Image 1 (cartoon, rainbow, N blue to C red):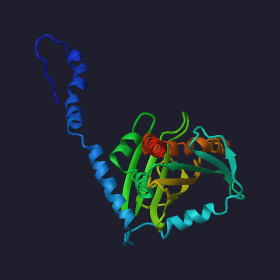
Image 2 (image 1 turned 180 degrees about the horizontal axis):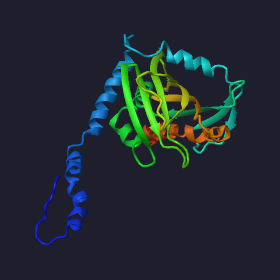
Image 3 (image 1 turned 135 degrees about the horizontal axis):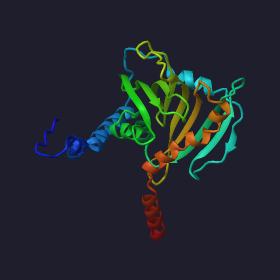
Image 4 (image 1 turned 90 degrees about the horizontal axis):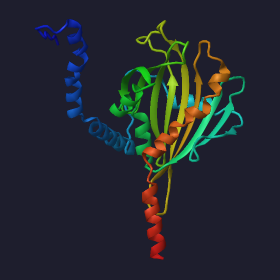
Amino acid sequence: QRIESKGFIPAWVANMKIKHSLSTPGELHACFDRNELIDEENHDALIRIMQNPVDEDYDGGSDDSIETVKTKFSVVGELAELESTSQHVTVKGGFIEGDPLGVGFGEVVVDCSIEECAANQFMSYGRGALKKFYGRGGGIIREFKHYSTQRLRNWSVYHSAPGFLPREFLWEVEWRRTNPNTIAMAFAPIIAGDVPIKKEYVRAESWAFVEFSRILNADGLQQTKMTYKMQVNLNGHIPISVINSQLISRMMFLEDARIKFDKSALIDLSSRAAIIGK
């Protein structure tokens, strides 16, 4: 857009108004925004796939991210209780023998089905998730390559602490229904020729293994026990002691998941109705 104000208005005054004159695209976007609806449709579609999964052929990806990450965390030593900042989230920490990087363990009960919970975790490509990622204090770049409905590649670049270069992560993310009442998901670091290491970032690594286990309730309420194991290596010059000190804060995203699906009011209402019925 180019504006010529004419008359005796100084050019610098007209230039000051350029930013405000460009608000129209943003207003149009807000007017026709369907992000929530599109995310809901995609979320529901993924839930249906998770309820009746089929083995899919795909191009690319590793052999088995889930088994690789599960095996990695199977040798974690004794876990110690850590002081959680949420009364609903259990947090523990431990180590793999010979590795100074800590392993974080988190657990929370979420008021939804295993499919809802797992789909919410897998859909980091959703519009709402991307809006949150790029929000204040968030990330710099996030791109995806979808191999199938069960596996994708996630390239994400995050701001780092002042004085440190941004950290980039390249994961393969895979989910699998292991039995009627459990869905497993893994985040495994990979190397990809089409995502070369850039000098303006530091390539970091993290591993995560998530299990969504169905809680069977007599009253029919669907709940999920979500357990999360994670290890992070930020590489570069960030001390390992600093990385390990962040174990608790990294697990607090579990509280966000709990809040998103919280049905405490409905549960309380059902409990009161049951008591009155007696």
